[in-house]
Amino acid sequence: MAHIDFGGVVEEVITIDEFPLERAREVLKHETVAVLGYGVQGPGQALNLRDNGINVIVGQREGGGTWQRAVKDGWIPGKTLFPVEEAARRGTTIQYLLSDAGQVATWPRIKQCLDKGNALYFSHGFAITYKDQTHVIPPADVDVIMVAPKGSGTTLRRNFLEGSGINSSFAIFQDCTGRARERTLALGVAVGSAYLFPTTFEKEVFSDLTGERGVLMGCLAGVMEAQYNQLRKHGHTPSEAFNETVEELTQSLILLVAENGMDWMFANCSATAQRGALDWAPRFRDAVVPVFDELYRRVISGKETQRVLEANSAPDYREQLQKELKVIHDSEMWRAGATVRSLRPENRKPHGA
Ligand SMILES: NC(=O)c1ccc[n+]([C@@H]2O[C@H](COP(=O)([O-])OP(=O)(O)OC[C@H]3O[C@@H](n4cnc5c(N)ncnc54)[C@H](OP(=O)(O)O)[C@@H]3O)[C@@H](O)[C@H]2O)c1
Image 1 (cartoon, rainbow, N blue to C red):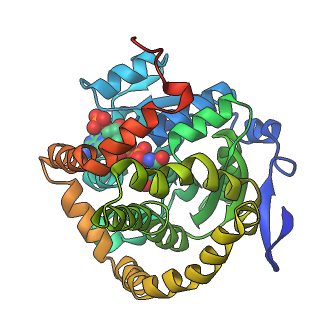
Image 2 (tube, rainbow, N blue to C red; image 1 turned 180 degrees about the vertical axis):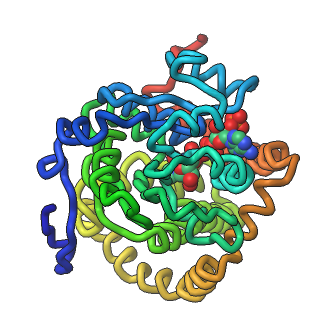
């Protein structure tokens, strides 16, 4: 374990220098890792584990397009691909990567499939932390562990294929075998984490729910729309409003932030832009504090969980979601965005094509 200074606070971090892949293979050599669910995280983690030489099987409900996708990825029905419960019975480590609502729905059956000494692995603290709502209460004779990649399963796989990784948090909720920690770290490394930082199930889910509702997705979408609408209200064209709101951010400025931080991005903008950004950042920060306060309260009280479980377990969940996404897709702002993207030099079709 390395001790690394994050902005003046020293934290513990596991890198592949301390826990190399060879050690992960050694720790997992007698395990059958059953990855349940083949949505977004399932394929990323299962394929990386397989390519890293771990004995892995997939559990997926039969009959739908997802099962077919697993077959296309080389999982063999009856050999490495099974219905969810059968895979859970065959596994010694059970990676519970159904959607969070799917975990709640299947738990009464999955819990019957666990044997003493198994590891029950999550990639989110959701099911365990909100146990009063999810009713996911593991038996005392299994390890309960978490590796939560901080990014999409698609990126986890893509980075792995490119030879890099993604950072993940890890936590141990229950250690019945005395091996929970080494199992967790081994799995963390083998699923393709570049480094792992410790957390708890509770902290992971509170920060994750806040982040995705906040800056990562919800807040970002909201402030973009507000600025676009403001510019349109004052007679700016859709192309101008979109370019000044989204395109310049995604194509230029956020890449500079990713590379070297906010101050470096500011330093590489005009003096006019810098002055304005430095003056206005505190105004926006202070304006959203009450919203973040409310958000965090709702996260820890379980209200956000209730909302997710109710919405995602509705029988017409997918149709409703498609409707909501279509409203965004068909809006002027995002139609303008599609046109702006099509005009990027790399996307432009030759004239007349
Ligand atoms: N998305 C990410 O990149 C990401 C990132 C970090 C952590 N996580 C965590 O990783 C876990 C998996 O998330 P995900 O986004 O990969 O999930 P997802 O894409 O929504 O997973 C869907 C999977 O769950 C199955 N499923 C859903 N409801 C089911 C039910 N009632 N019975 C049987 N199977 C059911 C689906 O089967 P069908 O296709 O047949 O419906 C599919 O295999 C979650 O705990 C999530 O919070 C996700």
